[in-house]
Amino acid sequence: MNIFVGSLPWSIEEADLRESFEAYGAVDSVKVVTDKFTGRSKGFGFVEMPNDDEALKAIEELNGATVEGRTIVVNKSEPKPEGERRSFNNNRSGGSGYNGGGNSRGGGNYGGGNSNNRGRY
Image: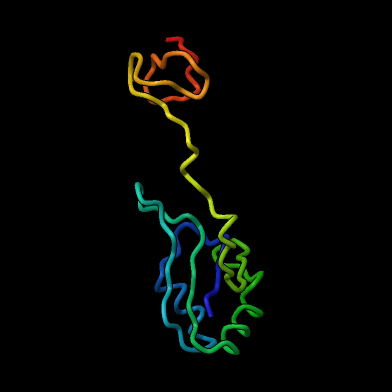
């Protein structure tokens, strides 16, 4: 079972998280999600446990527990339905520099790259 763990302290490491869940049974994997630019924890992660009964016991016991002064959230991770995934393609054509192409507001794009630039500097 894949388990979501949120509101984690910024300083927690994957080994610490693994140790907390191994008290309830076998753990296949642990991932603390980090910012790709800074490497700093985003404050949440995922734990994969092969035995559903052990995983449910861990969720029941650890949800609402205090770790380094923070109350953590632990629940079964459910994949988002396909329609709710965040899309970065918002179909805007920004252009690049002076008259680099039309934008969503009409007129020239003088600033480059910003489709909300209304033809002003």
